[in-house]
Image (cartoon, helix red, strand yellow):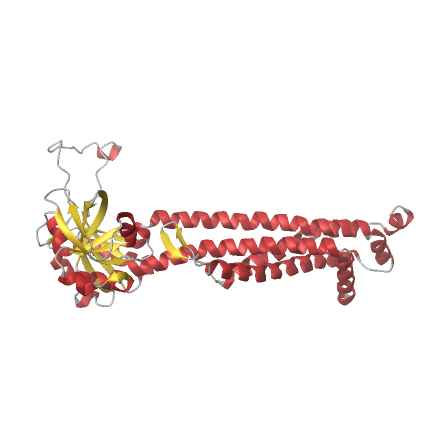
Length: 422
């Protein structure tokens, strides 16, 4: 019986060859677009996470002491509490980590040997860079370059210069590619750096690096001592401490523990990039909604061809029922037709998606994809995306076939055969 129904189903589809091919092509194109879109979206997210984990600190100890939660004096539970104002107008304290060497010693001790891979204290400074008639505000970061190299691997990302030249050159700069392009900086160029307080200082470009993360490529590295001078910080104070940990995806417990140990706020890279990660998640939901809507449209195309088939093959259906074919067998035949159309289109779409993903991944064009700058598009080759879209497409096509199959099952053979117009 099944073999007979399969043969009849194939003849129905081949009898309307042009319409069948058009429907299969529509399903294939929609499948290709959906798989490519998901691959691009997830590829960008995966690339962002991989790049951030590779170049940015996994945990950052900031110069913000962890304070207890403020008391809510407006609630009923606070009726017996009082508030005192001490110096209504106060100067905002500068964010700094005091006695940072003690914290570094703790992090490099045996207690954290398996969890903490690298420790890099730093000093952030907002300065004005002047070259000729051009000036631009930039973020300057004072670091111990050997320690920073363990976290960001800046030495491997240099496109000009080297770390040895940076270490032996007074007031040397490692300039991010974005800053270098904006100011037209090249290796050995001399520029003036004007801090918020203090005189201008002459500096020399000792290297240019490119990480692919726009926020990092907008930064200029200097020595930690020079950064402390720019910010008028004593030798025992820094802005913060960057950490590279063994498991960057499960760093939340360690961050909370370090807050208790150091007394300073510890932010994970997930918290620092929460807005970007949230944006990617929202885009993911939009793409999944797109999968549903386009899949429904494909289902309507499949339903349309089967409705037409039922209308044109009414006499054949009536004869089959007269010969003893049960209604359930006819329903199964048309559902089988919907499955064949959806499956063929989805498989063809999967093949086309492989080509489109490979094409986009190999386009030699430098693109700025949100927070990243990369050569070509970041595409994901996760086979789950293929299986998911193909499964949904076939499922919708099969479900859509129940509409015409139900109509075919309700046809009365005597009434159909009497009506000569059919």
